[in-house]
Image (cartoon, rainbow, N blue to C red; front, side, top):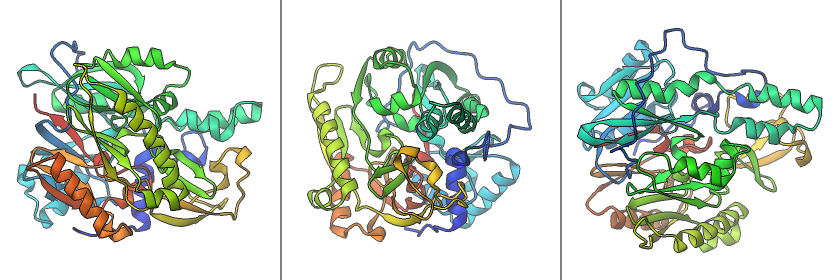
Length: 453
């Protein structure tokens, strides 16, 4: 395993790729600039007939990666782990970055002649959240066009500033204006590059926020769905989910991991984190159509660490929901509890001079006034670390490793054994994705699976 650098540039790129400098609170602050080239037209909309949201455990036609300076080491690790098992496609924002990616990968021993390089000026590193592929008949692919909300940024802005006074409304409006409207084109642009049809949905969601078993069942956190779609009822959203290709049953889960809060937020007491607000790829994944992997803090961790304790409570509720749920044929699910890594922490001090583009710099203005945070206050940031942010591609499972970050070797060995059992016959490869965990991401977030029809 190649060690991943955790330098300031990496943190800056993580932050910019994830949300822009949203926490600055200024209108459009830190956003990606509008594209300078003409945007390609979206492919003509397709009907859902014959298409379905596949399970990630099914055969994969291609795995998409995206190049971004600051994430080079992880990109190399992913390419090396995946290339022997699946064709790779790599997005870059311009021709210069395509060349940089070619040189980087070739020097590391990756066969760049077998990679399809593509240019899209909107390309983000976290491709998983940019699009959702569907599998169709006759080798065809589709893409679900969800609305882009910058990870529910308006909801976070309302919590951060409130809307009760004119001043609060002004600050909320300036904060929410950081949603980049150009990003709403990303999924349609990927569809064009893939020659895929587009299925439009009125729901706002990212690809990491929904898990499917390929046989009609979808899992979504109710809390996350409401963050992304404020004002819409669960019943209304469920009706829309059931319009997605091949989905006939939706299971609402409770909350995600406590270490994965909604953007920059307090978890409990002095513990803070930067997360997605409950992406399923952090806490629950399908290993096959009827087998679920569920994140589960060990007893010792849950009894000794307040964040692990909260996660245990949430996962216990999710376990109860899944234990009572069935697939579309009425059969129960098999649930495998996967240990979480030990909490990974670092100290942060709130400062009015904080640069919001850096994941380790925080200011009291990130928090709602009622929390009474103050500049100079020392807090503890926890990483959104989880073994369930893994990548599946045909004969390989790519897992994050946390042994170098405090998780006992015995725990990681137990995790490996569970994955060898759940994905029999597949090679297990480990990568270091901690740099992405500080902003709620991981190895899965940095890939995009295009299922085989």
